[in-house]
Length: 126
Image (cartoon, rainbow, N blue to C red):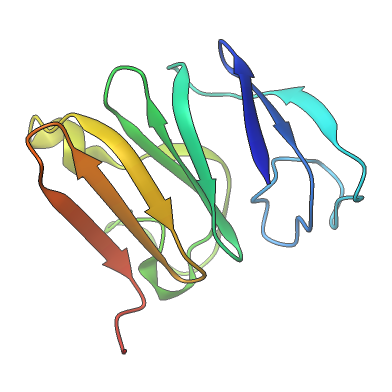
């Protein structure tokens, strides 16, 4: 789980098996721990899935981290693995899209843009 505290700061807690909580321990404690986020933008919203986290920046950018399994992070040029730091989903910047909201499930991600479009990625079997 995450709470946005302010400029480039998050409060996180929960299981951290894939780096989704951005805590150095392999599995995070239940006790909340505040820590800085290594991202070039201020986050407006953060959402968590079962093994990944996604954030929308105040500038409309999108970042994701955690488990890449089932392509749930939205990084088309990466292989399966874990992303331990927020990494920009460049699709939005490259297509001049301004993200304003998001929803994250266990193995998928949805992002709403300012023009009312919804983009989705991840495990799509069902």
